[in-house]
Every structure is written in structure tokens, then in C-alpha cells.
Image (spheres, rainbow, N blue to C red):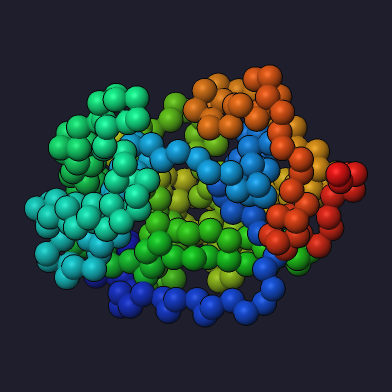
Length: 307
């Protein structure tokens, strides 16, 4: 049976109750972004997850946050009121909230070197156009999500905790699941589709393990060019994907146990904030932060000598 995720077949629209505050001791977990970091560059994973080194906020990244906030709030409105005009009106208040972060506000202030900042007006207009593009791809008056920015997590039998946030989760009356993710860039070429779907398969795996239902559709919405990528996984594929995640986690555990997080130079390095500390660019990483690893919940501290 084909699932129809519209107002006449959707669930009653009540959002899932927020997860109860965690009381257990903190322990390491794997998210789609951190798994992708390690696959791309183990040293980047270390810098972001264990060292927690600061990274600059870019106008493009903040615009993505803004657009996501608008699309999330769009579904707070009654279905009939989810119009393009209403969505555009949500941009300004969402931006006001984001400016509470001084780093975000500073993006549009003159730099210390006197360089002119990006134009705030044109930047906001570009965000509004991305929001408008969304309406070419879906009709929000016919969709009643079960969850938005929803935490999904599961502990696999070997103890690995998987967790992540789903942009939108739709559930049809027949129980079929659709996982939706918004991207503010353009749809990748066919050769890079597998990388784009990695995150969605992660969510599908967690939902299958927690609900016993394989998502009928994974949908990536690319607002940059108004395209959408859809995919229907099957159970055997999710089993294989789980093995992939376990292999990634085993490699992470080995790296933590030895303190050996090696760099992997790719084209993505051009956008990395940590080149000054990377051996691939003549830098030297700081000593492995064993205390930070312990604070992150790692039970096995690195086997390297500490000064």
C-alpha cells in the first residue's frame, strides 16, 4: 500500500513528547555528522568532538540555521495559514533570536581589519528566497508532521548509542514513515548521492530499531535549486548500514585508545578552521586531551604517554 503523507491520512498532528532529561552518566555517542567527520578526517573528528575547538560561524551556515528555524515554525501555524507570505513573516523574528549569539551578530559588523561585512539586507533576502523555494516542493497545508527537530536515539546491542535530530518526521495513518531533511544548498551530482543519503540512512536505522518500521521514504529537500532526492531503504540495507556504523565506531575507539587521529587531506580542507594545527599543512596538533576524553564519557583513556 502506498503511503500518503497528507492532511487526510496523516496522524493527528500532536508532536511527540520531548525526551525526559537524561540522568545517566554521560557516555560517548555517534551522530550522523560526527560519523561523517571521522570518515572524512579522523583528526577533524578529534578536534570537534574531543578537543571541542571553536570554529567560525559563516554567513552560509547561519543562513541554514535561520531557514531551518522558519520551516520548523511554519508548522506551528494552522494548516490553512501556512502560506508563502506567512513564512516570509517568520524570517525577521527568527533572525532576531539568532542575533542573541554575539558571534552571529558580529558576522554583519565591520571586521577588525576594517573589511566591509556582508550586506545584511541581501543576506536576509537570500534566506527569504530559500524559504519561498520550499513551497515549490511541498504543500505544507497538506502535511501534519509528527515531529520537527526531533531527537531520535537508540542503543545497539553492543552498547553503541546512536543519536541525531530529524528535521521532520511524517507518519501516515497506516504507520508508514517519511523522514525529511532540509538542505540550503543544491542537490549533489549522482556520484555524491550516497554521501548525501548517509545521514538519512542513519535516521532510518534508528527509527527501525526503535519503532520496528522501515521508513518508506527518505527525502532530502534542496532549497538551493528547488530539487528533491528521495530514497526507499529496505531492511537488509539497514542491517548492512548498521555494520558500517559499528566499523566506524570501532575505528574511533581505537583512535581514542591510542590517541592516534590521523589527518586526511581532501578538498574539504580548504574550508577547515584547523589548518594551523594540522600536520598536512605543517602544523602540530595539541597533546591528546585525555581529561576531555574522560569528561566526554570515554571509559578507556588513551594508551599514549602523557606529559
